[in-house]
Image (cartoon, rainbow, N blue to C red):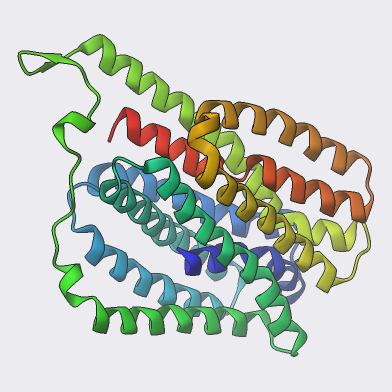
Length: 321
């Protein structure tokens, strides 16, 4: 999950270099990120059909290998459109890996989902914090953006090889399945209550809309914050990349806090008020157009909204394991 965070978030630092390298317009640069997100959406539909039918530990390792190979292939792309296609496929595989990690964690910890999910995503946040700073450091050593992708892809393959050596027995284990009393579906004579099932699906769909709007914010910030800080507010590239890392530091802090106190405050209350105040802070930090205010505002928005994804997943697992 930490490696997934590194690969997903370093696009914010490397995208300006891709734009300069291929001579792209802003909309063409945005298409690279959109292609990856479109691939991710495709993976979600595949996940609906496959995630509960395959051996998750084994497929987690397989997808780690595939992500490593695709990152290396991105670094080898000879032209813009090849890069777009590679990022589309990368989006499919990386999102499927993300889905498997979340689903498997939900299987392993059915009675403590909120804490476990937030810790899992806190680890992702640590990778996301490292990604931009690591990419900027490599670029500052006069390496091209391609080399950054080769290095991270090679790290994926190395970790997969080491994991294969140490976890072969674990890969053959069957997945844990939720116990009957965990399904939270009231039934009489073994028949689920249709009204209760319908309410659960409505709740999950509403949680899906929460993630939809949050993803617009998080993916948009990750992709464009360094470029915005550099070109609009005139800060140096190193500070722009640090700004993205600080934003993810706020998300890490959010997930750590929620893992400790989320159940006591109430998951729904954290979601609602975090989103309200986070939105206000985000709008204000952009309208004031000051580098310091922008970075501080994005950090605070990260703290207020950073636990959105693990919280919605924990709540959804509770409705429909």
